[in-house]
Structure formats: C-alpha cells, structure tokens
Image 1: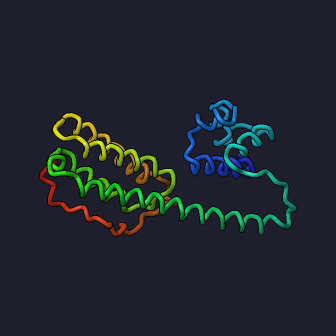
Image 2: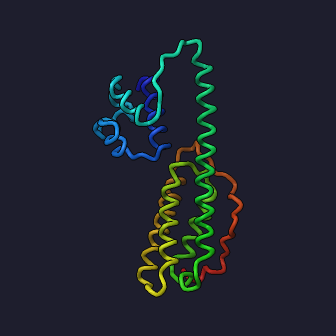
Length: 205
C-alpha cells in the first residue's frame, strides 16, 4: 500500500468510527457502495477525488491543498484538535461506565438474585482496566438500557434473565474487543469506581 493512500485510509476510518458510523451507514449517506468504502479503508483501491469529496462531506472533513512548508504546522494543529476530541470521547465513555456501575449497585433485591450478575460484575471490572474511547459508548449504552429494563421488571423472572443476558453479552463483547485491541492500546490502572462492585453478591452465579 502506498504511504499516502495508507494515511488517507487511516484518516477516513478514524473519522468514521469517531462519528459512530458503520460502513453501511456511511455508504448510504455518501452515496458510495459499502464494498467500495471497505476497499478504500483497506487501501485496496485507488481513491478517486469524487469519492474522497463525498466521504469528506459526510465525515465533516475539509479537503485543502497546503504548501509543503506549512504541512508540519497544519499537522500539529490537527493533532491538537484530535487530542481534545479524544479526551472528550474518553470522558463520555467513562461517564457511561459510571452509569452502568450505578445501575448494578441500585438493582432491587429481586433482580440481585438473578444468575449471572456476579459474572457481569467481573467482566465490568476487567473492562475498567482498559482505556475507553468514543466507539465503546454505544456498547456501554446497550448494557445500560438492558439493566434499566431489568430494574423495571417486577415479577417476570424470564424477562429479567433476558435483560441480564443482554447486558452481560454487551459487556463481554466490549471486554473482548479491548482485550484483542492492537498493542498500542495499553492497559491502565483500574479506574476508581464511584460505586464499588462488592463481591458479596457472588452467590448469585
């Protein structure tokens, strides 16, 4: 892959994931085949200017010809902006993680008896060892929605089990994604939880 093509592919892929768009959604908005977008992101096709313009429009990117001497200054400005976006995205993910911990701690006694809750706590503790970013927010929200639905159930044990399995599945997907991320994403010290996940309920497994 040509270096310039590889750089463009990385920028487009990063912009798409930061906007939480799937390739299919980007395809629909940009008017380009999904297969073509996949090839572009993998550097497997020459990128036409018309395609680049269509993608940039959807991804809120601006195409500009910059004098070569000004490139380092432009790159520095771009990196500064990306850092600010990354920090905001990370904060959003951490806030969603805090809500998820709180949801677990405030479950009613009836819900705490459901099998699988201890496993959910353990998986969440594993997730807390990794840095989070914008692309992880939807998965955390999906787990939160399932727990909120679980809390709303009064007597339907079968429905509670379904909601709990949904939450556990979402957290396990996130845990596996973080565990198998590229080596550049290093582990961090576990975040200090606003709500501790006690092991006293481990008997519900």
